[in-house]
Image (tube, rainbow, N blue to C red):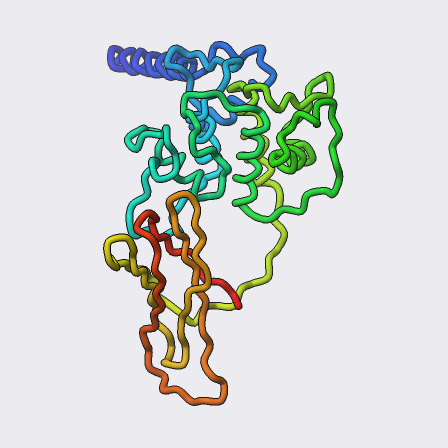
Length: 309
């Protein structure tokens, strides 16, 4: 019995030692004096950031585009689950330097289809500027809901250096205390953002979304159409006939193409409901309705949503 007790104590001690070694092995050894330490650790606990395998996070190193895009997509839980594709999208449909088999390719596809303004010729291994990263983070936050930002303008020393298309995003992150200025009242928009800076902005952005209620949006009336689907077939050698069909409660309803938006190599097709004539009576029989549009074979058709009249 004594030997058994000693064996159990020895095993317990070994387990505790193993746990302590395991915990320390996952801790970053180079962030103790970094101002973003607590935010980096927050992301680490969520499984969003990793080191280089040797216990180093390299907080002062510039973050690469592939890491930045992956971080934002995963951090805000962006996805393309609500988009229906006829053909599986590939990174090469949208980017010239992102290989289809790269481990980060899906993150780039998701970012693109969620409206992040990523240049078509972006280098996945290249650096990302602070204003560029702020722009992507703001766009990702906007996908989570419509928020009531305080109406004010934040002045800073180098605001004239911010790219015009990025200023609103920079302003929103400063107003929301998601991004901050340095001790000299500068944003340093053209500087490459470091891994630590990127982690801090992302962590604060995630907290903002978690703690801030979006502005309530008016409820959209339920659509009478169900089982909306899209199909395509060749029309000659250079065109596709794309058909959107659905089930309607009766023959009085119809469907029509509302718009075709061309972006990069996509043709995003939206539709609207044609309502029945209120002065007529229709047998309540489920009916298939359809509408078609023709597009170039150079584009991949994507089913967009219903557009309200």
